[in-house]
Image (cartoon, rainbow, N blue to C red):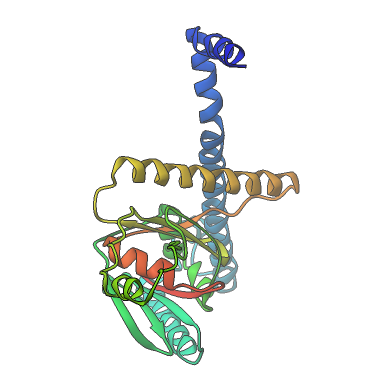
Length: 280
């Protein structure tokens, strides 16, 4: 058996062409996912542009005050009004969340705060160190396409993480009461584990949380492994959607960096089907 394994290794790694071929095979799934996501994002932005232009032409055609050329280049979206609508949706949805018993996640990019709310009371507020909004999401905001999108709370559907949801430690039962007392009095060890988790909500909202601290080697490896897992699963969904002769919806992603302790607290506090609201 060992001899066969050695022969297989020599066959695969004994030739530069085979090594290159194996590398390309491993890189093919993530590259395919990147291309599909790029195409879906471009199609989504084109559809928003077309929808906005068509609406403007119909509205202006009744008045006859502008030429067709002016109608196509003139934007009907008022950025200040869009910001007011998004802010109104945020506070209305936060009020709705306050009436529920479950834990909710509140993301306020304007004030750079992520908080865990219970019945409207922030039980833990976390300072956002840095964040990044995907270009397609910013483009949708500029086109006024997020007014209806943000009208209701987002509901958690799935997640990918570098750490377990609920850490479990197995200990041997104490032999007597003295040993049990020593175990109780002992300070629990501080858990050190690098944190990245990706939350997928309905309406194509993706929230990615990273610790601000540098990742160690094992954490770096786990982070990229979870990214690959996420990409493969999303790639399968994209391909399945295209087989149904439909364009896949793009990822509306927000990347957030907070402290490691805050990231662990948020991830482990969120229940199944957790709701979140976003202000940006």
